[in-house]
Length: 258
Length: 282
Image (cartoon, rainbow over all chains, first blue to last red; front, side, top):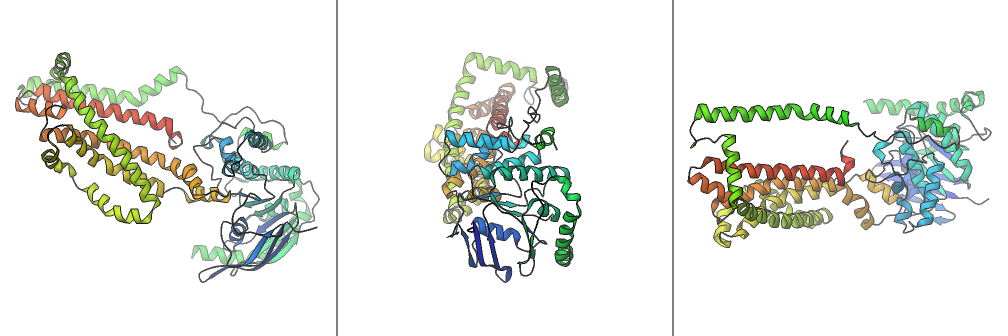
């Protein structure tokens, strides 16, 4: 199987700070990969470089063998803050991608309406963001990224602003949607249990400099339900990853409060 | 978490009927909210007018110094019946509308230029900051000297007073566009032009409207003060000639018309904001 995404020797420096050092990664089509690590480990920077929102200092990112330099329709970005346009309806917000690509025709509109249905927003198409709950706004965020039918979904802590219960619901929703389209997903999160629950593979990042400490294969059967979070296998994965990053997290917490 | 969140979690089952829409208020509730919000204000105005009436009739008791609200009302009625009031309103209104329209167009254009070009901003910033803080209305006599006592000298004063708040707000609105929203558009490969049209301009609209709203009060002041310095007709002229004749009811009539115009236009703008930029309401 050829790689959907291949990252080699990726390094990013912000002046003196080495945010990412020599990241190598190969992702198969349809693979769900999570990136976890303490604050400041560069996982979000990594995602932004893959998105083409930020240039790499050295090394390269290839999608289907072609090097990435700028944003493109093969990648859909789901933001941490939903970044919805407050003056647009749910449908108009979800249509922004096709619109920018100059393909906002009737077919794109039909597809987007289907997607809104898929993410559970049927009946809310003409609502405005201020009328929606946080969970619903993140559904629009996801539908907006899916509306350009990308090969790869890049998700930057999309559920971090939601309360714990809504977050669990959104995790199962995301898996349901993913099972239907089997997009390749890179998912950045702080929540270890979220990463294990969702992923085929969890990349554990370390900080100073940001690098991949370990790649953990999650061999839990799919489809997964929330009940799996209480199985001993699941807990073992979470414990293992937590031990990998514990010292780093302590260090970053102390720094943030210093 | 909403009901729809829970329900749609149980797989593709259709979500419940939309529940998040604000409910239309019942008429009774509407009347109650009217009473809650405006009753105190209305009572306060009524008491103020009554006090004014009593003061001017029984305490000051001298129409040379203070006119009573009832006398002012009668003056408005008679001035409007004779057509004189309408003549003044027409002249002042024309000066205001021409000046305000020109200032809005130039102000928005200048604000756009300053937001999109660093050089344009560096060149114009000191002038705009300086002139905004200067009481340029004091230059009205000079403009009258240059352009005569007709409407154009007043139009110029209106432009000078309205231009700067509009420019400054337009520039600020465009400059403070959320970087996160810009980044969202960039992630879809948007061009700078698309970013401007789809994000910067709509998100600057509330600022531009606020600048235009600020311009109303300043424009009215400009018209009246410029007319006081020299004019053939207009509400400022009405006020100054009434003062010369010690006709207090007519002087106040001019002021009342201006106040009503200012309040009406500001309220109209509030309504327009509700229509154009409803997302800023909460």
